[in-house]
Structures are given as structure tokens and as C-alpha cells.
Length: 361
Image (cartoon, rainbow, N blue to C red; front, side):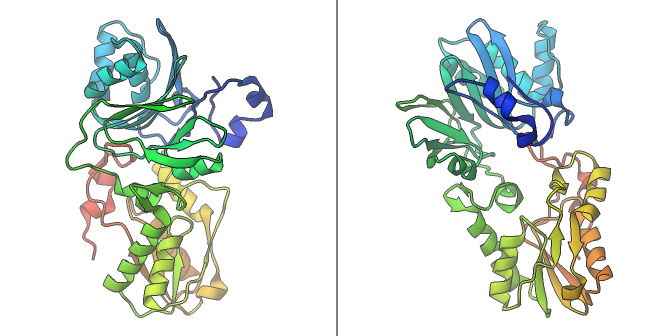
């Protein structure tokens, strides 16, 4: 096992890769919603069990993690972090069952919330998804035989996989070289609760989810925005990168020219997923540089994917006005975020949500 804080290319250099040999592996890049953004909370979590080693990586958030954690501690089970993913790993290690699929099926009714899981054991790799289907999880077939599973189809395509099926809500899938073994551990919830933020912001535009291409969904959202929130303007400017497809859709539907008048610093991460508000605010001004020669004297429609805390939008409007824009009309593809999310998006309180406390106007 090797994990650390940093970019994948920084954490896994050639020396580390040479030491990690084997025919099966799991990995994880972390966006912290529970526990601090430190190497201690990096995934996968790995422990030794009576059934052999167990490693688990998790996308999502358990809403009953605190209660489960207290139950484990009351039984004398040691825990070293505040991570809900560690709770899941320890619960799975002690679960009854003849094999890991049985043990997963025993645990899943006890886990409340969002989870897309990959699990590595001596028996192989397993994938599981909560009955609401909140987070994506897709299986692909490797060109040389065998299977891979990932949160995004774009990641599968990077390693030459052909995406063949999603892990369905409530399912467990065992990935063997010759075949997939599927078990419906829990009935799918009705209705399902697929997170809209995946299509709006999180997912890569080249990914497919729920039968839809993310890029095409964002283009259509931009076109709808142009029809429902039209304004007299001179040009359309996206907030790069996640808003570019929506801006393309808006420009096509409105007939306005599209200009890439905000230049993004590629060495600054996504500001929404920074763990602290102060870091988010500093990040916006470091991340974007407006092109005054394009903006000067123009009426600008600025397209963004969402407004959550208002951190980015306030500063972007100020940046464009300082660069000489005559007017800035802010248009957003996501409906107002008026309530917290406890299912894997870092917006835990109403107080930090600008739309929960102010009207759209």
C-alpha cells in the first residue's frame, strides 16, 4: 500500500510504481467531506483480517457514520481517523459471511448514505453501490482480458477499457478475469437519487453517466439557459473549465459570439473543493486572469455551472468589471442550492449557502 497527499503523478513516481507489483489494484483520489484533508485520511484504507488483507476505497458519505463509529468503539474496536471510510472497512472486516460478497451484503443495510465502493481482497476486486445510486460507478472490459471499475468512464477509457455496464444501485459486482458475478444486495430505492452535481460540476465532460454524455448535458443546459434567461449582450464568456460546454450551448442558442476571456491558471486546483473558505477566496483571484482587450466596453454574459457559497461569482464579476467590461450578466446552469448536502458534497450547513439566505434577485 502506498498513499500520500498530492497529485497522482507526485505520489506515484517510478520508484513507487516498481514496488507495487500484482495483477489487481485499487486507487483513490480524495475530496474531503469527512475528516481533514491530510495523508492520514487518504484512501484506500487497508487492514489485516482473519480472512486475509482487506483494502477499501469509497466515494460518498455515510450519514450514520458517527453512530456506527461509536458502536465500534464501545465494542473495543480501535479506530485511528474520523473517516467514515475507515468505519466501513472495519465493519466489513468483522462482518459474518462465507465470502466477501456475503460480508458486503451483510454490511450494506447498516450503511445509510452515499457510497460507491471498490474493495480489494485475496479473492479479487469487488464493487458496490448504495441503493439510491447517488454516486456513479462503471465497469469496463480491459483489452487483454479482465475488468476495471471507476467512478468515471473517462478514467476507464484512459486505460483502454470499453465501458460495458454501470454498477446498479444496491448491487455488488465481483470482478474476475473471466466473468462478472453480480448480486443484488439491496433493492434499488424508488425513486433513485442520482446527484445532479455530477452532471453539473464534478464529472469530466468526456464521461457517460446514466446513459447520458456529460458534455452534451452541459451544452443542453446552456441552451435552455439562453432561451429562459436571455439578455442583450455582446459576447458569452465561460468560467473555465467545467462551464465551457454550457457556454457553447448558450452561445449557439443566443447567436452571441463565444470568447475565452477568462484565462485559467492550470496550477491552481478547483476552488469549490478546497477544504477551507479562506483558501477558496484566495484561490479565485489566483486562478483566473481576465483579458481586458476582449472585455473592454463589452456587455458580457458570464456562464458558470453553479453558485454554492458565492465565493467565485462575487470575485469574478469584480475581475471582469475591473478589466473594463461595461456590463456583466451572470448566468448559472444549476438551480439555486438552498439546502445542505450530506451525501458526499462539501456543503454541510445552510449558513454557507448563498441561495439559502438570499433570493435569486
